[in-house]
Length: 182
Image (cartoon, rainbow, N blue to C red; front, side, top):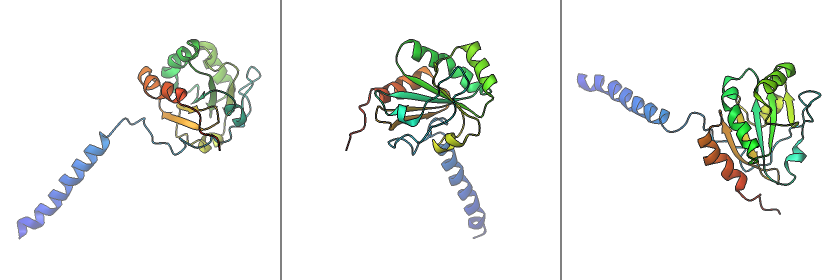
């Protein structure tokens, strides 16, 4: 009987350890199931980054073909890592890319784009307070959303884009047909 009393906590610990180990290995830590996928893109009316930017609103995302919206910041090291991927997507003509500068100083963001190149063109919003990013479900930067021509979010990726992520998630979501209209 005494052995049983000691065995129960040990057995419980082993079961819990196995469960946690399997849960941690279940997938990429950057893959986040987003409740936003399949829903209309939230409002994104923000000021433009600076006088060199035009900015954009939600209505513009629902006109025509798919758009990729990337939330980024100049202080973000993973954003710097994914920057060549964004540049390549735009140079290849594969995507229409808009940017949202997240909790950043406009002059720092502009310097980042001048040093590394500007894949967003003029379509850059500034979310200095991070309030609109919360509405989009952004938990940190970089995060990327694919919006179809009807303004519906078709894909969401949290973390720096890689070539593998672009091929597996971003490009297929861009090729998917827009949502059925009622």
